[in-house]
Image 1 (cartoon, rainbow, N blue to C red):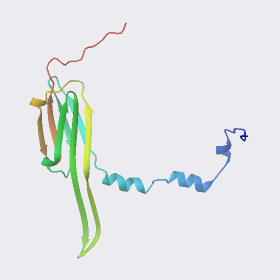
Image 2: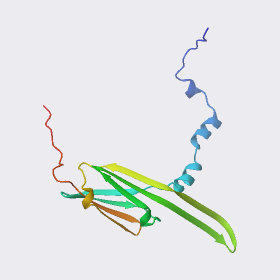
Image 3: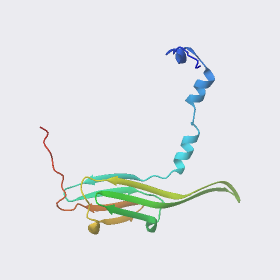
Image 4: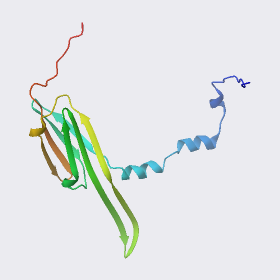
Amino acid sequence: MANISRYDPFREITRFDPFRDLDDMFKGFMVRPVLRDLEPEIKMDVSEDDKSYTVHAEIPGVQKQDIKVAVEGNEVSISAEVKKQKEEKEGKKVIRSERYYGSMYRSFTLDHDVDPDATKAKYTDGVLELTLPKKPGTAGKEIKVS
């Protein structure tokens, strides 16, 4: 037979365990900042005018031949292969060496379909600039609510 116990909603408040509370407060404190530096991410600005979208994506430390851009309808995908190496030396002795090899990926959806044949991409100083012209005749339609 199952044990039946009475539920007390204030049990967690009245029970004080300083070690448990401190452990929860500092849980992952030292892990997050270290991993955040190693995880690459693509930061972007997207702007729009009547004829096209303009995307500025920060992808520092990547060669332009390692960047791939795909456009399918109104979905845009940017991927890049990252090879990051950082080494600190003191004399002939290596004090610290950090290396990261991996890939970054970012995908987003726009309001209008994009003309993939007229799309332009330029990579300068770690910033990828995309010009994504809108396809004619794919404007959205506003629907009145009755």
